[in-house]
Length: 495
Image (cartoon, rainbow, N blue to C red; front, side, top):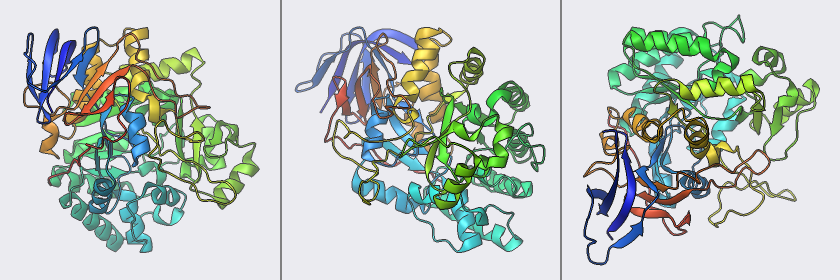
């Protein structure tokens, strides 16, 4: 059915256009953009007066593989949610599973470097499930350097995944930071030959551990320069911490020299990962400037009291999700670090959204999916799952004026889509408002858009998104979820 958005402030970051206009959606695409469009017969007409109409947000870094998680992200303005930092393997299975279950948002995956290495090192058969990947993060056996035979094996697996629809290669180098840096160069060479981007959680910085084989951000820009691969630096805010200025200056030099380096950030002073992660070992925390009390278990709310308790939990349940506070958002200096990461020229907003869990009681298993809306009480996640994009708009547009609205859509919609233009030509129809483009559209109230999720109440949806369309189908209508809408489609790589 056709939809006419009447009289909104239509913003297109591709052309820099910002004007009052009508926009007609037909057959899942943008059919017309001009004033005075006559409503087609039987069309739904939405009064967008006073509202902003823009391309839906493209999240390059989302680990939510559920209808529940997609709904929270839809209320945050997201129309395409891709897991590219970690990825899932086999990618064909991940795509098929999402298709069977239905998704409100578009979805896609990178080839998982960590799972490929686990298979090569341990004969661990990959499962296209993020909870299985979390369990893997605390297993040191796949994190060592690979033998020549193992390296050939996992490189071959990654190459196969690229031909099966992966959107690039997701590299969790921060979880195997003692592995041979030459392996990363060889991986980048594979990516360059396949015209596929890489998405890297970099290994630790030299400031965090002088014994690291190579500074994590230096490693990424070196690989980009030597191979010509497109290299995406994931969550620069959480891996750079209070060394953000040094890292951003390094990226500046790399980009100025012509390297294909892109970068993302999110607006929170805390991250989330498996408590068994290499960099959360008690002896590593001082290098991050934190103590065990900076860690809180997601499902129970337990704050880790001391080093002894941290060792106990890491041994008993290394895959347990935890919140890690690395910057104090109440501190003006730490807030400034976060601001500079988001304000960096061409920095992309990406959420690192985490799964939502409903812990079972009385020995019942944890549940990771709920089809009810509003979501049932008792769910836990990181607030970035629900609020990254609305919080970025609040901080960078409404409160500080650092971004114009055009710039906000450039960073939330246009730039992330362009990262994938070469790997997935279908992405060229996303991230902008052009006649013929995919009707992945967000309609938001510029005076009301804000995040509401907190660490104590992490599943509260953002407010201010009035309408959200995925391929022309309303997923959010009049500020609330359309419960039976599952129009999301797979975004596939074309290696």
